[in-house]
Amino acid sequence: EAQVTQNPRYLITVTGKKLTVTCSQNMNHEYMSWYRQDPGLGLRQIYYSMNVEVTDKGDVPEGYKVSRKEKRNFPLILESPSPNQTSLYFCASRPQRTSTDTQYFGPGTRLTVL
Amino acid sequence: GESVGLHLPTLSVQEGDNSIINCAYSNSASDYFIWYKQESGKGPQFIIDIRSNMDKRQGQRVTVLLNKTVKHLSLQIAATQPGDSAVYFCAETPQRGSNYKLTFGKGTLLTVNP
Image (cartoon, rainbow over all chains, first blue to last red; front, side, top):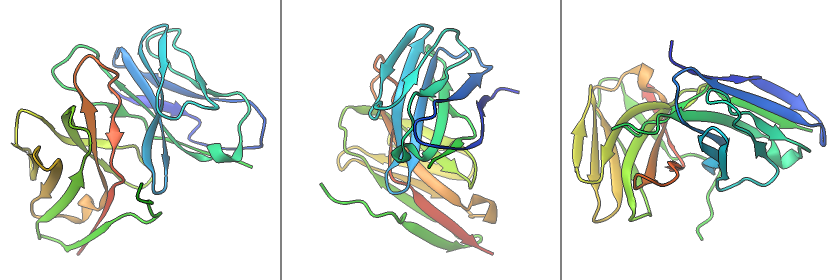
């Protein structure tokens, strides 16, 4: 089944404790992206990757890092989480060269930073 | 800019009625528009899309209308069913070749009463 998977789905952590949220897609998509969703603000892009070893900042990159060492995986890294990073996070992917621009979203990771 | 409240716009309809969800966008350079449905606890799910060279596109029970003059997008759902209850987001993206970043609207909560 074609899908985007994220782990963990739920995480409660404390300020300053490094964490990684994994994202994996099995559709051989070149493009991957991370979004955060907050009440009243909708979904906002954090980082994106056009292909392996190519990453760039989105609208709200502060406090986050990403890596793209292989096509299928795009982990989101919070080196020193803070309470304002409490949010619902979504990973998305799409093929680079296609007639459709649809992005496919993972199920989400709900992160709480105390 | 205008402050954004924490509460989503809501639309409540009776089962079997038609629903119309509206969205205003701001970027004249956007050339691709998508409607997503997000059910509780899940990621956004693609419903229908439309390119800027079109003003109407129909899917199964759904129709998207695009008015570029006033930068307005609408989603029409025919014969609304309880399973259509969800938050609906419009999203826009600029022309091909750039970051495929989706800029999302704030969302509309659709509630279908049986």
